[in-house]
Amino acid sequence: MHHFHSLKTRLILAFVGLLIPVTFVIVILSYVASGRALTDMGDNLLVEKAERISLVVARHMYGSAAVLETAFPTGILAEDDISDMLKELQVRFWAATTLYTKPNDYVYYGNIQGQNFAIKRLSPTNVNVRIRLNEQENRKLYQLSDVNQQPQYQLTETETFDPRDRPWFTLAKEVDSHTWTAVYVDFASKDLVVTRAKRVLDNEHEFAGVVATDVSLSQLNQFISTLSVTDNSRILILEPNGKIIAASYTDNLKQQPQGLPSRVSILDNTDQLMAPALQALKSENWTQLSGLGPQRMLGSNQEPIRVIYKHMTDDAGLDWMAVMAVPEKDLTAPLRQTLSVVIFIGVLAVLMAIILGIWIFGRIGLRVQQLSVAMRHFALGQTVQLPSCEQEDEIGLLVQGFNMMQKELLTDRLTGIGNRMALERVMGHYLTEASSKEPQGDIQSQQKDGPFSVLFVDLNRFKPLNDTYGHDNGDQALKEISQRLKNNLSARDHISRLGGDEFVIVIADCDLKQAVRHKESILQLVRTPLTQLKNIPQNVSVTLDAAVGIAVYPEDGADISTLLKKSDRNMYLDKSKGSR
Image (cartoon, rainbow, N blue to C red; front, side):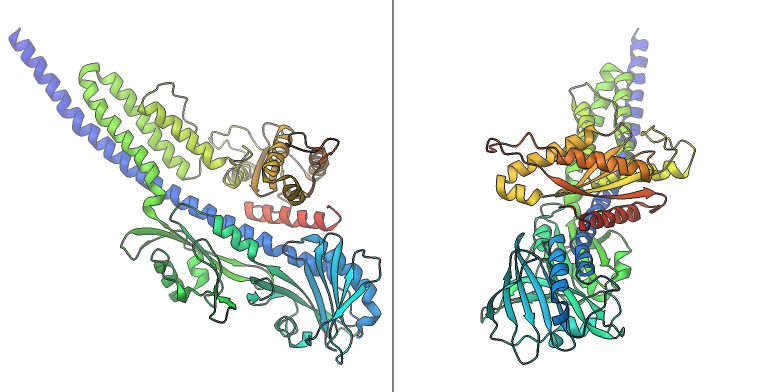
């Protein structure tokens, strides 16, 4: 018996001696693999934020193209004397300033004779008309409350305004397409503004003048100032000359001693976190930096940071750069804390194995391995739902936390529907399924055999609802509309909110004809009076409207970006055709 117990003791000690190093090897390998997954996940978050900024900038600037085309459609020729075309200018410019009132509420035209016609929208039913008909007199201001009425004279400006001396006129005069001026300070509004302009031809197809519209950048700066990746992140949008357009951590304007505002440059930067990113920007090509993806740099305090650059351009010559810098520890710290719990549980499992046996340890080890693999797959873009764990221990909480983390990353917090990351994953899945008849092995088991349609929905009259009944009711309206649209979809379809009052709906097995029917259904749902608003006066019915743009795969595009841009563009066309 003594030898038996001695042998049993030795076997137990041998088992524990073998189990401990093997377990530590497994834990270390899991830690390394999970660490890489955490880095990939942080980089994916940076990429998603950069793409979101790019889309917001494109949306903010794109409306100006429709405004100019409405004011002076391509192919419309100008008279030498605008006196002969004041009425038609009044009608077209009135319509142009209703398309995208923020930020495009001001449209103006100047010709080579120094004449000028402009409309500045003050409210939905009130505009300011500015006219200069000859070089010997200053510009006159009129008031107009109906597009078909005669403008009412108000005053004559004391300072001479000659459009031929303006940068937008001289710049557009030399190019055949739309063009942007440099960003400048509007001293009336004390905000940054950029002007989009295009040349206009006369009956001889010679240069006659320039039509232009101002784009205020205050909303863009407000968006960037409230956007964050982590509490310590830094975000900038810059011009090639180094001047700041928008920033999350500093002002884009500064006061001069005489009280006038002036631009802030990256040369004024004193932020230690952003300094390495800006230094690289000074020495490298913009396009090259934008194509590298997230990069690892050392901050001024030698702490590692993750930096990403996004070069933003358009067909009118836009040339801006978005820069994001985030401390690396801020991206990985929350998940590394969770990972520490996993390591603790692994070590604890070794001690419990001595008492309870290999079965319990093996079970815990399996859950740790599943979580590690799931984190890596998620970082690579695959959605992995771990089996529900009813255990109320650290492993169970960790699995629930991982599943909740996925839901948080893929869900719009306000409405509960998908966000942009969820939309890109669904569209990526549809594209993969549409290009291959073989099952992909992804957890999304639905097969995709035919085309699919992307419907870009932008709510109308949402801002007046916000202004009249409050932001709480605005949020409630977004929730109600989201649920209506979601409840109208099949299990294979998907809806995401991009932000604000914009939604994207992906309809499976849907061609253009079917998509048009879906559009009519969406409009009917949106136009139905809202029922969930609070403190609305009795007998008052609050309704919204929408503009819907359609893109169909593969006719309108074979990738996510192209389909979204096409549906976004078509939405603007729908808005310009009369949606209010």
